[in-house]
Length: 392
Image 1: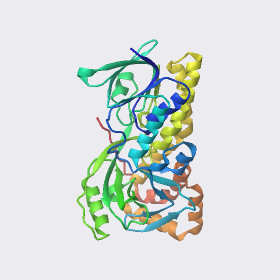
Image 2: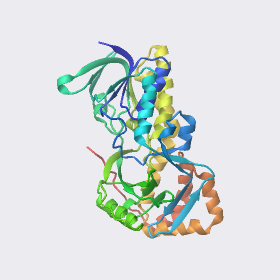
Image 3: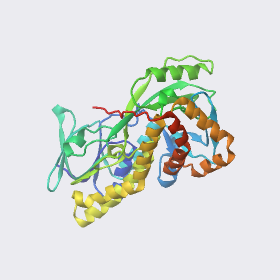
Image 4: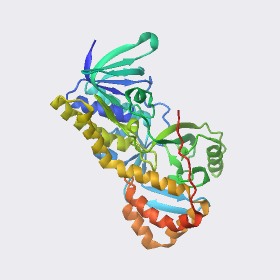
């Protein structure tokens, strides 16, 4: 039975990138991915910040659309436009993106196990035993460390004592023909109270239309899609896909010989539900910590906890601020959102302050500033507590 240095469970962009980085440092790495086709039918807007492409060597051929402007819509149709002098993010083809990173990992020597679902992990004093494959064809592989990059699948977490994120949002999305769409659109309406819906160019005359919500009810999004497409003179009967999105900090992301990265560690923007950039950032931290742990010969949770402290210091404030502001936004009624739009539109100085605080990947400063603007509206509307959604 072959023994690897590290086994990465999950072949999405964060898992493949982690495997690539580790193999590039000389580790013997195996990667397990339960799907037989990488990047297929992913429920994702596919928007990745320009900073991610600057900091990481990501597949440039996956870019479908460069975003340098966006229009925001209030519940009543008030608009705010934002335009940058250069692209601040890219819309990507997730299939090309995910497969591109995986191929780079394989080129570095990562051993791929595609179409093999990991069904169990046993952590021993010296090694981890990974069981993968169908029940009648279970394969067992050993590794000194396991990296969990399983996305929103937390089945293995339970057995390892990791727990799950405190709450979940739901992303709902469809793809429609919309050749006349000139720029991305963001909607703050009753469908997405406290969150947003989007209409994003996806190349070839198509658009991704979706929403981030508290529940999986697709009826409101279906009506929204039909109304938006009908505004362009077309009709559509959308097929809407959905997936849960981790929301909030997890209690634990390390154990003896195990580290979790990406959405498997709850490293998700609580504002937008995006996780690629945060996952890549935290992957770099995980790789550095693992390198030092191997050199010390100490793969215990006590040694690996340096990773957890470091990534929380990087993005913990972003995640917690996003959770707090989302709760506040959920207590605002549509009329107050409209009033906030009008306030920003008529105040040039305020628009300048907001522009200086805008960052595609880091939202805490802008959100904290926004909270000060929202306080008068919140006092008028009063508290309106909203329950967090969980999935089984």
